[in-house]
Image 1 (cartoon, helix red, strand yellow):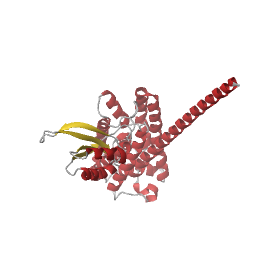
Image 2 (tube, rainbow, N blue to C red; image 1 turned 135 degrees about the horizontal axis):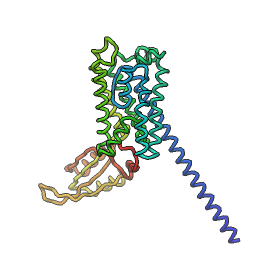
Image 3 (cartoon, rainbow, N blue to C red; image 1 turned 30 degrees about the vertical axis):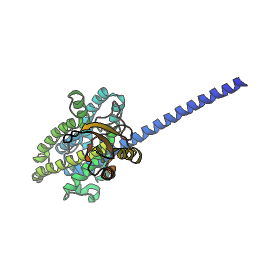
Image 4 (spheres, helix red, strand yellow; image 1 turned 45 degrees about the vertical axis):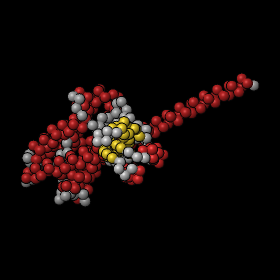
Length: 348
C-alpha cells in the first residue's frame, strides 16, 4: 500500500512539473507575441509619420527615410520605402553579425516591415503613380489631410508619430534600421553614446537634405525659395521626434530624488516613509558645517506624484528641515524599473 502511495505521489509531482513547464512556455509565448505586436504597431506609426506628415512636405528629419526622401526628390520614380530597403539591407546584415540572433532577427523584421508599410500606404493614400512620384499633398487622401499651409503642425505631428513609433520598437529590443544601427555601431566601437551616434548620423543626412531641398536642387520649379524654410521646419520635426522618443523609451514621468536633513522627528519621518509611503530610504551620515554637529541625512527616491505629499509631511514633522529635490534620470530596483538585459538596446 505504501509503495502504491509513493508511486501516485511521484506521478502527481511529475504531472505538476510538466504543468508548470507548460504554463511557463505559454506565458513566454504570449510575451513574445505581445512584443512582436508592439513592434508592428511601432513600425506602422513610423510609416504613417513619413507618408502622411513628413514626405509630402519635403521635411528631412534625419534617419534612413530622411535620406530616402532626399534621393526620391532626385529620382522620383523610386519610392521612399524602396530607397529605405536599399540602405537598410547592408546595415541589417551588420546588426545580425555583431549584435546576435535575437536583436538581429527583430531588427530584420522591423527594418523590412517599415518601408514595406510605407510603400503600401503610398498606394492607399494617393490616387495614382504620378501623385506618388510628386508626393502631392493636395491629393493626399483626397486633399483631406493637406497641411501645406500648416507646416509647423505637420512637423510636430510627424515628429510625435515617428518618436512614439521608434520608441516602441526600441523598447522591444529592436530597431527600425538606419541610423539606429549606425548609432549602435558607434556606441560599440567608438565608445560614443548611442544618442550622440544617432545625432551624428542624422546631422549628416540633414546636411544632405539642406543641399538638395534647402537650396532647392530637388524641388519642383518655382518652389526653390521654400527650401530654407523647409529646412527650419525639419529642425522642428527633429526636436519633437527626439523629445517624444526619449519620453517613450524612459517614461514621461521621471522619478525624484530627495535629500532630507531633519534635526527633529526623524523617527516620525522614518515611520512615514516605511509604512505610509511604503518606500525604503537610506540614512547617510552628515555633519553640519555651521553647527559642527553630526546629522543624519535621508536619501529617498519617490515618483513625481508623491513629492508634494512628502514635502507636506516634512513640514509637519520639522518646519526647519533642509530638503533638496532633483531628478532621478533612471531608477532600478525593487519598486522601480527592472535592471536592463545584457543585450538590450542602448538608449543613451
